[in-house]
Image (tube, rainbow, N blue to C red; front, side, top):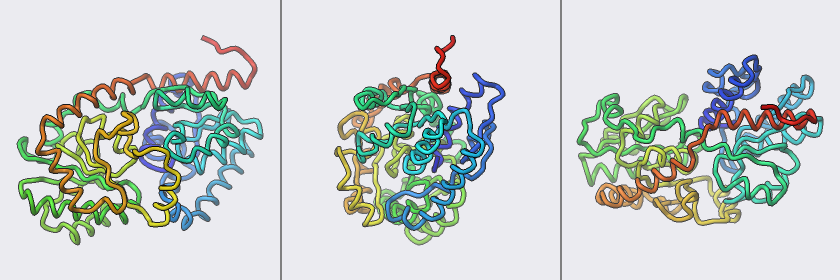
Length: 378
């Protein structure tokens, strides 16, 4: 796993596995949520927290070194099963090596072969005994390529309530019940703060100039608080941005609309039933590569799942401060549009809610049983 969302996914899987196998020992690359489920961290999950081709190239020697050491340790003392959580560029290589040595391998979260990099299908075929899918259309797609897969639902759909406590979240943040609130989520990686942060905060400055009554909350992941504070002071010093220590779920529960970076956070915002403007800016080289590899016109998960533009997306040059500000105001000024969106997002929530920990544990049991050459037990 390489980010906060991956750590949360791993923690849900571990919860189900530990219920089935109380004496479970888990170790590897772990974040705080996984460690809270008893996983031992050989390395912190932040070792892999890099996004974008140019950014990965800069950090490749360090990441490759971690991967080499991880493989060596696992081959020296093979586990009963290896589970790679997200981070396919890192994990599929590890899975292939371990599978060749006889270790059963599972990949949790199907890489987005339906959106870009369809060539990863071959890597999945070579590397995985089973893929655990979080979207309902994925197992059928993988079956066409002879890849065993199980739909386990999206863990976040069980964690995030149907009706978030907006009043309680506002009370915790000291926000009045009747003020319009914008949550600003430029990303959880250092590289995303460098590229998205300035644009997002310039949009905040525009919004403050147009609507001084707006309130802004910006959750910062650990380690990036100081950098974001500097950006706020430089780009939007008079907007009164409330910088939080983490607490992105409180920010999403409290807000009326969010300006948000593409990625798992867009699904979280959708499950909170919040209108959003999806934006992303990346290194120019990475952007050119990504453009050539895209298979569909959407990057935000709500739009991908709906197969149409439920919410606006502004990428790279289209993500100008003025455009982002106008898109945010478009939601605030059209309550019926917001109500229609929330109806769609409630239906999406229902489709994604399953017993993810239990289904993950069942799939792991099947993989282990198949490797032993026995029929699954009850």
